[in-house]
Image (cartoon, rainbow, N blue to C red; front, top):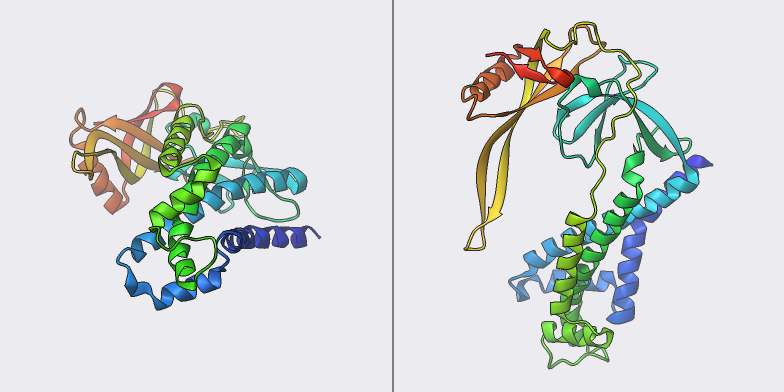
Length: 335
């Protein structure tokens, strides 16, 4: 029975967005998605911005329904979910945590992408427990309990709301040429697509300018007020090897290097990338561990100018570098 519920829920998450768009198009424009797709397939060469429209549609579509899908998933798991625990063994690359079963630390690791957008910089976080929420009666990984916090759900709601407004605008741009050609009542053929959209918004006391202002305000609110939860550090349930002590030397194989790049807009409307000079090197450790674990080093390449090239050479040869364990069980490369 649990599996039936899970399959029905998955089907609903896929079909609900399509059904909502179908209802919107039929209630406002009196056409369906199939007619819209066929018309544009036949008339794709009548406009030179169809590619932009398609990209905008899929971006806003997936952004909107991913955020509200997150909220629906949270409600579903609150009703029909179960909690299970996994053990954290580090981040092999940015935003990709690795976890193993608490019953077998040598079991194949499971990868989970969270919202922390970071690496693991200390041995002290290894072998800590993390709780996940999943559909009852399934062997799925699910999502961390923190991802269903009130702040996370509020953030999803606000982002989804911000994406809803552009999605409606894209659907209008796709549907308006068709309703004019078909002579659907209620639409003035003398109005441009943009003016017709303005006319649709007017009874609601809205305008395109107000929509843009609302969206900007929502995104500012998300960035300032709402903080997405990262991976919380639970209780360490297994002891670290005796070799992991402050002041000790340890060998680690570098597996990934990331350059910290700032992206900003220039006066021409384009983007510029600026290298901050900061680097993260992910190291794999196997000695005295039941399976490979991962700890990273964050450093300024201007203070250690040759370290990045050395690390790349060791990545190619899969050979270890010597590191020193510092306070809080962080690591530092030995020159």
